[in-house]
Length: 169
Image (cartoon, rainbow, N blue to C red; front, side, top):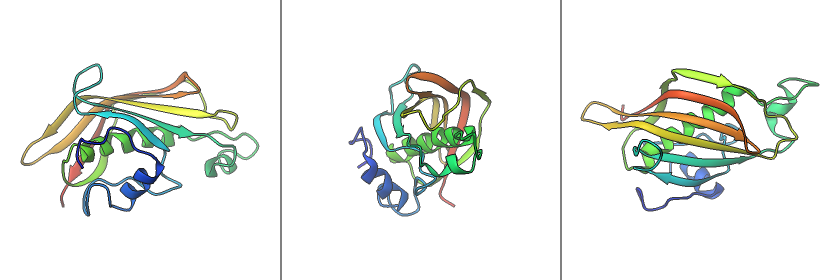
């Protein structure tokens, strides 16, 4: 399946969360409610501004999403860390989609800028992940990427140097 399919619907993403998309022991997405996207609309191993790969995904915002009830009561806002986690999820997904083996985990991020908020009246988040490096050696499988999150077309989050690795152990 690696690199044949270039878009994924919610059913595909849930299959990935169950370990069915890339095979047991390989990259998985979290299950809802921590799954932070509803569909992947584009994915590549050589696209994006650096020619190293990219992912574009969308997340439908509804006022009844779980985090609005608790963050913060009377002033509901999506936690910025969930947007960052969505970007990490997509970075790891791209590595698994390439056919690279191992379970994904976030290693860090160099810079995060939050310039807007996701409130219950927003309708759509758009994630963009652009790889600056994708490395697979005998000892290391890792992606390094920059990312953005837009809410209804407005840029609200920017990250630089996200790092996600795959490990077979």
